[in-house]
Image (cartoon, rainbow, N blue to C red; front, side, top):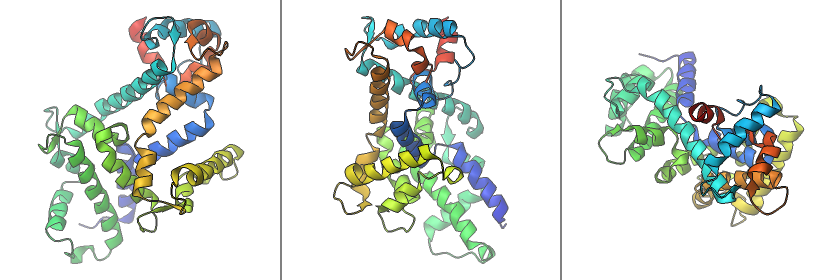
Length: 325
């Protein structure tokens, strides 16, 4: 059966939004790194899906709720929050978010409700059962031509590319090689950028998405193109951080100064990105609220500068406080 271009586009959009897009996650974190907007700070401290939980609270209530949360961040209980403690907190909020995302997605993929997701279940639910057979045929003969697909070869090729790409991701996430994903494995499948053992997929998918001319490397133009927002071409803030990205490409990421990012340079940029992001955000928050410049945050400093935190990706505030209070 032929797939129309409209249907293909709809299916591809559903596929891409169903699981984490590595490149979208990278772009988001790069933008947060350079901008440090109030919204991104709040999402960091409160959790990605709770960054606006404080928006409608009074100053008094916001301060009271933040004060109740700070002991959770202060792991050693000494009354001060240092960079390491805040970094761990931010990272924990990121992991909590992706686990909740996986919890919501798993029932849709686990057809027989046995708590695990087989490759067959995933392909059937995401692409359609016919693609199991198509993938098997292509694995046996990559050059096999199907006359029925002659009208839309590009459409079919594009769609099968996502099936094959997800197979690579699935197999890497399947650490025990049993052709099915447990909850933890499924979480890594959905969000490979958060798991060290998935770094191979993160690098490969990023290279594929950025390398528009398929020459095995990323030019400055290809790199910057991923950070351009077609709807905000004239936005001064966007232009500022894009210029910073260009500078970062030339001075930091392109280590051999040949004008391109090869696989090794891409890996050097991507693999430590999550640790760097969490620590960078922690340092940024402390710097903004550390009134006495002693390098740590007292509870009093954090509460005094409450508006910095209630909207940062360090705390899934609404959920935590509902459990805590």
